[in-house]
Length: 106
Image (cartoon, rainbow, N blue to C red; front, side, top):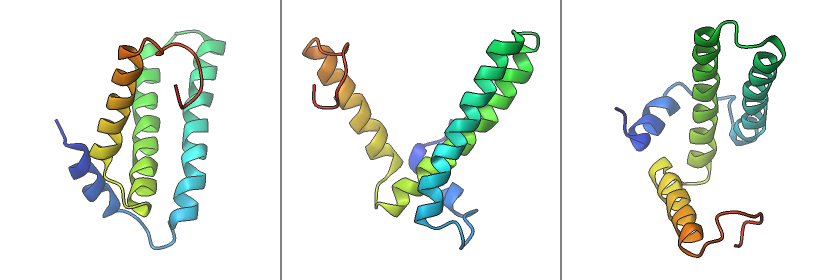
């Protein structure tokens, strides 16, 4: 198993000079769109090839992780801090019985 901070450091070694902060932020949406498109086609075509779908989704999620790592680095954030912060937020919402609903400040 890989540590998310270790992943972030290693992944950024593949970053091209042209993959600046704007590119990383904008392409995060593009990569998320590719995952959504893959899922939509799976729904449309049925689950004829579930292992192919899982393999493709794994690749798309990896691309998303790379972009998240880049955006995090550009903002001086560690992946572990992001992950822990998210878990803390979810635990707080569960503890306060507001895990359902919408809005960031609940």
